[in-house]
Image 1 (tube, rainbow, N blue to C red):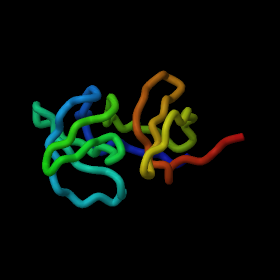
Image 2: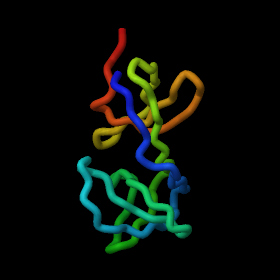
Image 3: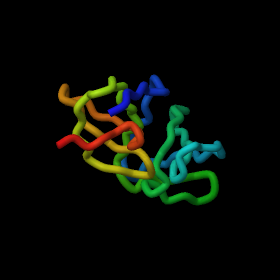
Image 4: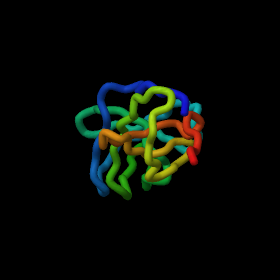
Amino acid sequence: MAGHESAYRTALVAQAGSRLRVEPRASQFPGWVWCRDASNTGAWVPETFLEIRGDVAELTVDYDSTELTVSSGTLLEVLREVAGWAWCRDLDGRFGWVPTENLELSA
């Protein structure tokens, strides 16, 4: 596995049913939408997790935008893959997103 450093200090954490403001922003990862919550915290959210109506979206699942900062060779358990990213747990029990291009399967 290649290392990955989180690009954002503050995570957007919201429950299913939360309303978010959608903002146009180019992404290198198709399938992700830039959103802000009521406290103005912004983050990328998988489009499949949203019901979008104009510039407002409603989360259809609980969501946490935390990215894991990991070193090369870190062992991770992949819990879910979405649009080029994996929701993972490390050996210390921390959860977060890591690009799938940084992951490799171990035997």
